[in-house]
Length: 336
Image (cartoon, rainbow, N blue to C red; front, side, top):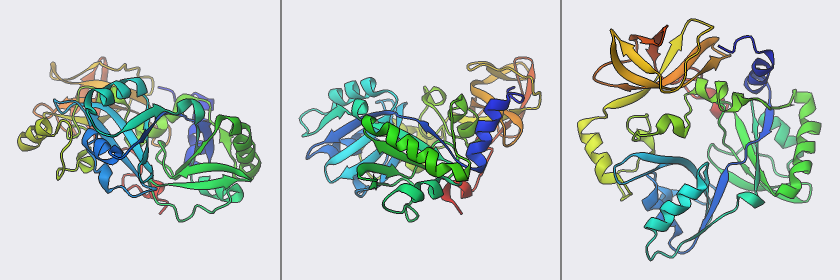
């Protein structure tokens, strides 16, 4: 599909083989108050209450029907201080307003005063170690720590959306020039590049099986392989409906698929068919430059199709697969 687009391929391979950086500032909601922990623990399916200061949780927010309405990362910054990273902050605030009742919790949009740079790739740690005050070698996945660049305070998170070792630098907008100059100066010997194309939301994360809300729309955590995020031993919004799904089994699965035709063009929402019967719908489609194949995700009815089946999407033949096409054992992300 995009096989011959040299600039896009180059940026994809820069992240896979060296290091790249980009301003990837999500919307950031700061949550505080005596009941902040209890409130967030109720709103999200993961055990936010068990997160220690400096830890982060990838999780989802459900409606009363158990359907995902947002997927986020929740950082515990301090005892009664959390950051929620989202792309839909206005919707989240309205949802919080509708469910906080009399709990002692406050929240505000701190996106205008926060910039986040993603620094991703196998050499990302080496670059940051060269100019941060404190070395980051001991940082575990989904953690966040205070650090310094010269005399400027920043926060460093070990996280990312590329399927590689990666970090995020949180700074004030006034410090963007400083951060970029350090990345360029100290990253030069490591082959650093600024990433300007859409590989950060297409080929890189899709090869790794990472999703967007456009993939999750109308689904529940069990249909999209997020069982591991659900803490069944606590109360959370949408739990009763999700327990029914757990008892009877999910009706759908978010699977991957491959298409051998390099020239294929497939749009989201296109029907997936077997012998003329609709078995699901496409959620995304792109070219995977590491695996050298057109890949996509589709929400499939479990009763009608499974991994390994040959299907038709428009005029193209595809094979249903697991959703993770690259680094299945997560060794790259864990830097093993």
